[in-house]
Amino acid sequence: MSELPHEPVIQQFPDVEWEEAAGALVVPAAKAPEVAQWLHDHNTLALDYCSNVTGVDYLEREVKEKITNDDGQEETVTKTEPGRIDVVYHLYSMRNKTGPLVLKQRTGRDNAEAASLTPVWRSCELQEREIYDLFGVKFTGHPDLRRILMWDEFEGHPMRRDYEEPCDYEWEPTPHGEVLEKHKKGKVIA
Amino acid sequence: MTTGNTSPGIDLDEATRLELERAGIIVSQVDFIYNWARGGSVWPLTFGLACCAIEMIASATSRFDIARFGSEVFRPSPRQADLMIVSGTVTKKMAPQVVRIYNQMPEPKWVIAMGACAISGGPFKQGYNVLKGIDRYIPVDVYLPGCPPRPEAVLQSLNYLQEKIRKQDIRKDPAFTKGRRQYPVPEFAGTDLEPPYNPQVWSPPENPNTEPVVPPKKSAA
Image (tube, each protein chain N blue to C red):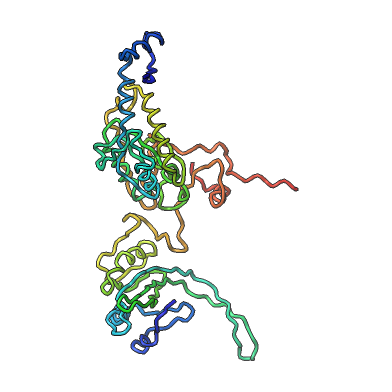
């Protein structure tokens, strides 16, 4: 949740949206480096430190919404919300000792792509690599985009909600929990 | 002073042997002297993987003092170490390096798998990124359970290892007969290491049931 005023950002950049529920600024990827540089160099905001970068995965889901139709009756409509991945930046000002201001880049789940803010905040470098590794978001403009936690040959992105771990469950004399479920399905090797 | 000289195959009755010992003459086999000396100076590798390493370090501090058992010399080079304490979670990314370090150690060498993770993967066993026990790639001499084990347990596992060393037969033990034991270093593949385990060292437990395991039904109360 942002602690700093977001209005000056929206006044300067009309493309930027304020998401009230999350307390975050949603920035389109094309504008992100420009907005980031502006926030970094701003006289009063002076957001010179990015403490945290993380990803959030939202699967495609159905949302029920109550609307009033043409006849004036209330109706429940089911809408499909497409899946998306948010890349969240938490920005602080070391000079003013204030923060955070939360910045988000939003991208689709297929061919996920976002703009790298490493040129603005050096501390993003490893964390953006982690998001690339675990969520599969490509950061354009990143100086060294490689996997960081998993090995280079690894397939898939484990932090995605629909990631399926490899089936390498072995027989155990006392299975329990999730392993017991795999046992019941016979999804056990050896 | 008696040395606990219990080597078999000496054609000498106990009373005579003890009398000679009191006079400062030890009648024994090379095995006993050799193993007694080596067991008293097991040099571990300076090598820690996770939180268990903190307990391993604590066992070297003055409060617990691993020096009492002759293992205070932690060597930073595998070429000079006798004992590898695999202290902590072995991730799949780290496993090839662990095997490689083991291969670099000269004989005789021993391994202690310290903590639940090093033994079986522990709480991370069903995860995608943790090796389900280091014994899949290298032979383990002492399994030290705990999460993490206390320094006293580390010392006890060292005592067990010394006991094991005392029983080694230098004519037959693989540490002396097979040259430097080296095991194949696993390679990275799509989701797991290739191979997932070394069949020379380890094989998965056999399922005695042909059917998948079903939990027992609750009896009507």
